[in-house]
Image (tube, rainbow, N blue to C red; front, side):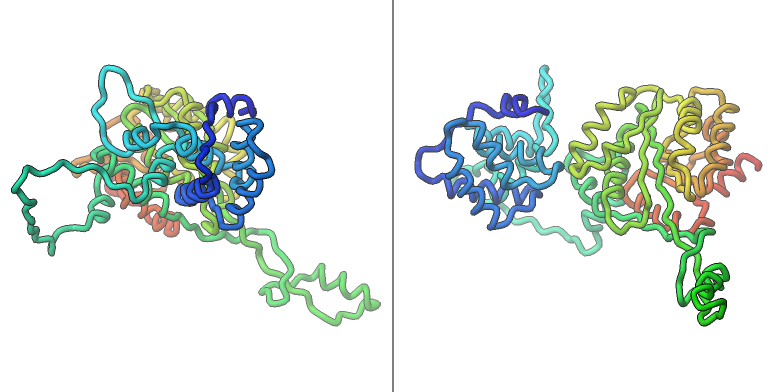
Length: 424
């Protein structure tokens, strides 16, 4: 986005004339900090001095002066832009933000969707603002309600076991915050390559001979070595067809958190979406702002909530991407219900090739939430023999159990039981 395009959205800007500009900049910095932008007292002082030096000869200078003082990372620009627009420009920003935070009934005309970072900007600016409650008639007082909650489940525990498809908008927002805190650690693998280590368990005869040549062939020290460790890649293939759209959004939030976690152990995290065609959204998930990341991924994946052609999409992946991303013992997460329109024999062949190229293939299927689930669909029967683990993927608890499945490759989940139903 160019300078002119940015300011075309945020102009005109009315500069306050009440002599409280420094105090307003301070409150603006607090709103940025509440929205997730790291702003300290030193930057506030620098911003006030910079505005004094820049002046107001051009109104757009005020925006870029504050941006230069408060924004140090590219992923914070979207949040800064929304907080700036709501704080400085729009005279009715409070009503607009309240509409983002409270449920509303959709009319004939579709309401405007909040942009990336806009909801968090609204929450930051409305922190501590009390919502208007209905007044009670004169002479009436609110009655105190006593509830026996000794045996009830906590809200977070209930949310962990609640199906993504059954969540309300508020519950889904809370679930996404819980998914952002989940981790998916993985153990390192030993490589066949070695590295020098004085305490290693193997003798390095080549290094020993090279060292002895410096002393006229006399061996004074035995060199030792050990095997190197390497980290695998995580590759996610996420079904975004109509029957999987709600689950896919939750899984993509989880994958965004995993791809931006430090110390998780994964070498790289690759993400692909598929419905009627395959789309690589890896670069979008690397964006720190989750709203901007998923908005860009949804804009690129044009087949969202469409049909399903798992076989042809897996063929595209095996042909174009498997050699690039499945090296170094990659773990593949396949998120789909297995309801496919393609030829089951071709689907079985592509699944076999995927299984042979990966270290481990874990299939997350939301249909497994049903007690009477059976592999009756042809697509499920064709895919099931070529996965290492078959697990449910319909709530937060099932995604939390992924760490155990990855750390214990022998955990096949429900695969053995369902293969017995197929007579294999």
